[in-house]
Image 1 (tube, rainbow, N blue to C red):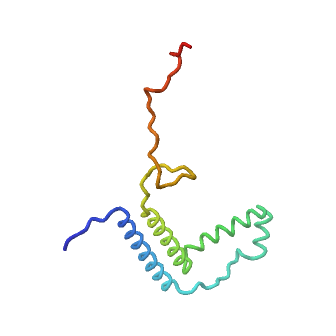
Image 2: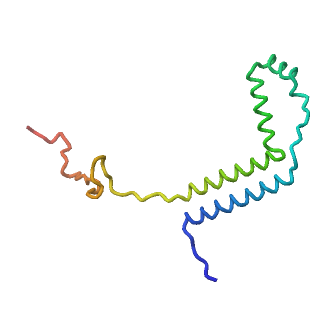
Length: 137
């Protein structure tokens, strides 16, 4: 069997595909093994608790607590499966973005200039320039 040496772009595309497939498979396994998210009664989500949060820290405290609980909820049960799937898709997209080849630097074309008649950047002749101070006029 003859092995081929792939360029950087091809390797990154294969890596992105492997990351995406692995992430989706792991996500599916987590989803099926997690069972259902039973709506458990949480004592700290009562109106009295929320009122106390607002009294002690204001609306910002209530919002920060809700945000913290939302973030911690992403790492349990079926929410974890969705989090793993989204993160693997983002990482795969990052590798795919890195696989896009950068076009080579070509001749500069000014706006309104015909690209087929573009000339290379102008060379500056440093010896022909007048430095100043030598002129006696």
